[in-house]
Length: 96
Image (cartoon, rainbow, N blue to C red; front, side, top):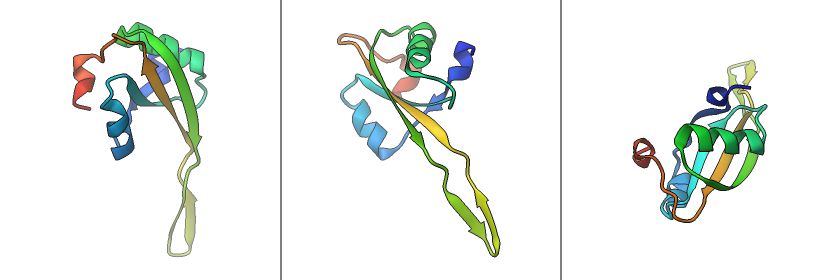
């Protein structure tokens, strides 16, 4: 798996914004096939920051219906990346 395929986008919610205020934790939507080692390598190579730890969580897709038709959103994975002390987020992620 290529490094650019591992990280999809940063996840911006109220919870992740509160986690980001400490300056060390960033949350990304990642590929479902990616493991913690893949996420760590991708963040260190693409963003240039040293990683202290990675926690991953798989989120189950919701059932959605419109009238009598039922559909399902796909499952997705998120990764909580903790940076080492003294490391800083890249500038383009500060506002995200």
